[in-house]
Image (cartoon, rainbow, N blue to C red; front, top):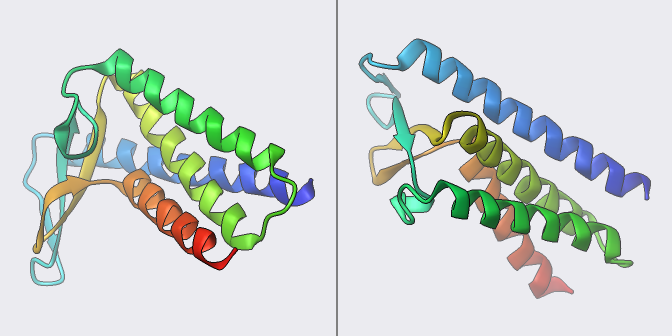
Length: 147
């Protein structure tokens, strides 16, 4: 049980980090030029995403809030219902829950998700919460292959 509580606390820390970065980007990059890092390999830019990944379900805020809530609750329930688990499952769940909470909170507070990371070889702009979600799902794939 202690590990599960630590997992949820880690999720909250990830969500707070995400929201802090989004707050900073919104207040310091909104209506300004982007910041290029590593000779343009990475660009920090301000973008309001009113949809989900890659802009799908654009302007369907209530549907996206509902879907996010369902996914977050599902992973929290899985975390507490699952009797046997390992650290890969716990960490993956924490990343998914934290990333989900970060984007959900941003969507509820502003009506959109702030994206700000752009890579020179990858056109879509994304954020820290998206990175958490991606790492979490990759971890779950690894977990499913080793158990």
